Picture 1 (cartoon, rainbow, N blue to C red):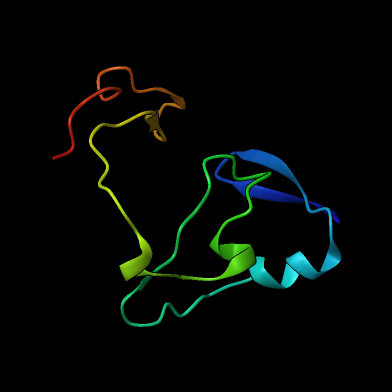
Picture 2 (cartoon, rainbow, N blue to C red):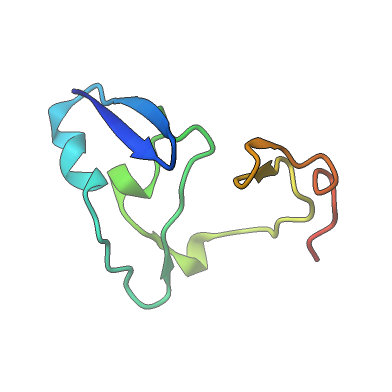
Length: 88
């Protein structure tokens, strides 16, 4: 399944390998208490909560320490100043 999604002034081709995945991408989603909705970092090709649902909070181990990537949505550029910053 392929479709075009418009975000601001940019169009993105979105492709799903199986038709049954489309139902997971329509939202809105209601996330149960003590669970989290996780998204992959490759929105066009990520197997994440849109596919396999929310994740129980008690199954998450560890803590994020630093920003790996940052994108400035206003000017559409990499936000180099934020990359590598501590988020503790």
